[in-house]
Length: 466
Image 1 (tube, rainbow, N blue to C red):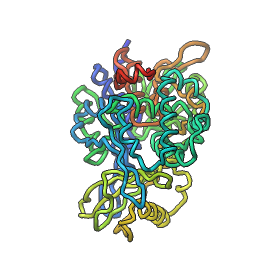
Image 2: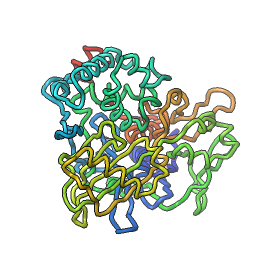
Image 3: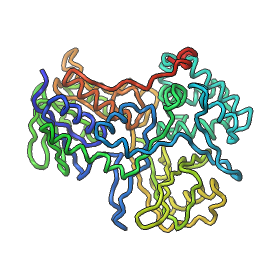
Image 4: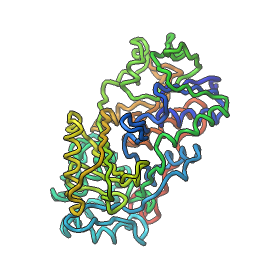
């Protein structure tokens, strides 16, 4: 039976997705979030130095992210997303090289542009083409056979030149999976190329928010209230109340929030702090939380008194900085540039002055005409626990949304899990987070679940990508 009242703990994308779908199904939902805003790790903050609203990092939605786009649609904010079909790659001393879809159907839509991709020489482009052909022919079943090995192993088997790895494979994989090719699970990286580049023309399009990320989630409050739900911001969950084989509520700093079921839409480490020893002993999903490890991301906001970036976005192949995004003019009238460094372990102990020096050096390498590149202001944002590390072997430890009630002491029957680290079929992404929230809601009410994937083109299916 569908529970009358459900508490969702965590106001990130997974929690928002679960709460909205539950409310739409007629469930009374209480969404609890420690911070005074929604969005979790994909949100904005007010810079105390100048009062500006800044995103903690440049999060993007891709065309293949059907569930994230569905969530934006439910929130009524799709018109706040600006789409870019091209990516530009730095190739100094020449101008940036554009990689964009052409007239052929997927998976050949990027081929005309890739033939002119001067970031790689002809021999390197042919090597990349052979590996792409292998990814098409192996299909989705083929990538599953690579689970437990690294994507670096696959590239080695495909005899990829070191320069092609450094200037093409590594920038794509580290940006999408937040791990370098030497560490990331091969299946996760293969999925990025199969579904994000080869399956559909629209799959690789990038959508960027025109407004601060936190504003995308503002409609959630009204949508929940309209369905009889409640949003409780600034309320800190302290523990999950557990009684033999059930959770009965959420213990917060404002008292107990009773519930017939709970969706814990939290990072694995935060969830572990809310679980008693008896609860962890009762649910096998909670006994594997120590297997997960974080991977950090660094976002750097730079403000200039003149335009710097000649393109809307820029990939920096072979450099420490992976992406640059033109954010337009700030409220103060300065030109706002956002630099992103994924898998940023080596940057976490650096101070802001050293971070700025390194980022500026990479900007000047990528855009020689910007020299001297002297920002008016720099603001670095360290997300030490941005994602879980999608290493080989971790996929088998990712828990499902619903309790596993088979076997002795095998589950807490009304505790549901959500988060990008759960079993979503996706790497650590916003899309994965939303999928997990939808899956948790479906496990409770018995209907719904993640929306369908972007269809694979007919030609791609005929060639083996299915």
